[in-house]
Image 1 (cartoon, rainbow, N blue to C red):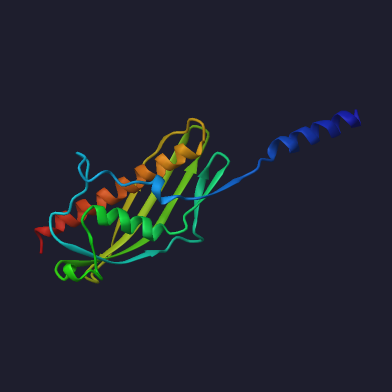
Image 2: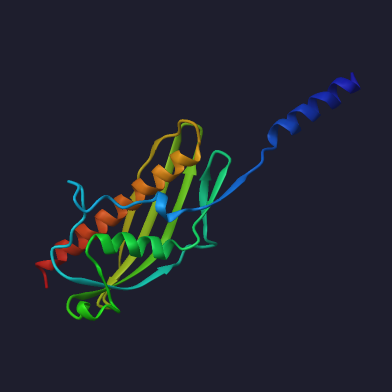
Length: 177
């Protein structure tokens, strides 16, 4: 009887351990929507992207299945995607006109349960050092196999959505200025 109890405990504990695969995010696998696509983000008036700060606590980005993701340069990824949308670099001499945009990346992570994966992106944005506003995206989808490709697709979707929301907010302010 004691052997059976020990065997049961060993099987239960042994079944709970899994090896976590650490993945450094490859920015090339998170492309912004192509500029020529119907869903392309475009600014209606000039904006200069000044600061992009990674303000995420701890820098971890969640995971999917056995994959734990870490962004080495999330600020660089966001900056590159917003440049495609038409935000010029504040350091660019041709960007002398337009409102200055400072952006803090507050959250960018992927959570999961058995059936759903939930990527989340949250930006805090200030225009011309004014009052900050928050842009948030949460694009849940089915968790099929918990693969690395699935996770990259989820991150790409949430970044495209939060960036589109930001562009929409900036465009809404074009007529106000």
